[in-house]
Amino acid sequence: MIVADSYDETRNVSTLTLLPYGNIEISGNWTKIKDNFIRSIPK
Image 1: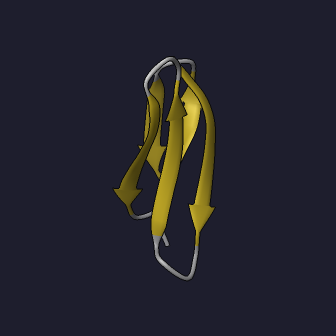
Image 2: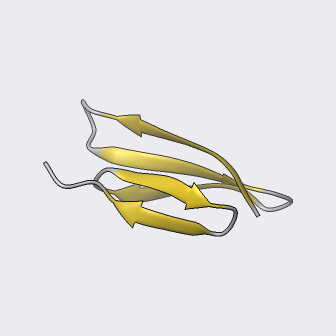
Image 3: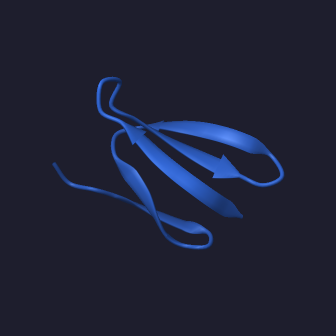
């Protein structure tokens, strides 16, 4: 389950926190829209 997301503009990386596994980093601006779904945010 995705419990948090954050975006670092200087690195252009989104960090997603997945319980119980930890963090994953994805290139670009992504955000959580539902418990287990993310979507890209256009520039």
